[in-house]
Image 1 (cartoon, rainbow, N blue to C red):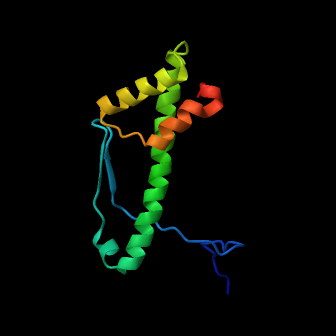
Image 2 (spheres, helix red, strand yellow; image 1 turned 180 degrees about the vertical axis):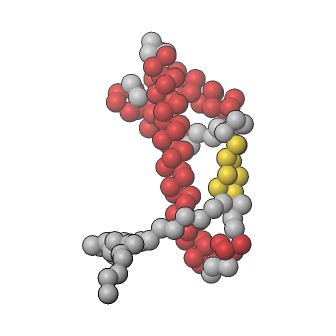
Amino acid sequence: MKTLRLLKVAEDSGPLHLPLQGLYADLDMGRGSVRMTDEFATIAPSLQAEVLQDWMQALEQLRRRALTQIYRDMSARCKDLPAAERVAAFRSSCEQAGLEVPPDLAIALQHARGGQA
């Protein structure tokens, strides 16, 4: 009797990430929301906390990457300004848009590649 293998067993037994609905975005308005499914509510609170922590770390990485790209795009348009002024303009622009800039990110941007981030 032949069997059909639908899943390939990985060499290393790393984590199996399952898709779970709950993150929603309004791309026109630039807004996001979280609405976890009833399925998520049924798992143990300790596992919920672990999963949420992992997601928050991953989302923070993505957010920092996006903010860094915003800075690079802005910086490319005002190359003549000193790094400190570019960062100040970036922070002001983000503040006007309602985007929070982590203090350590602003410092890193100012000092990256000799102030030419």
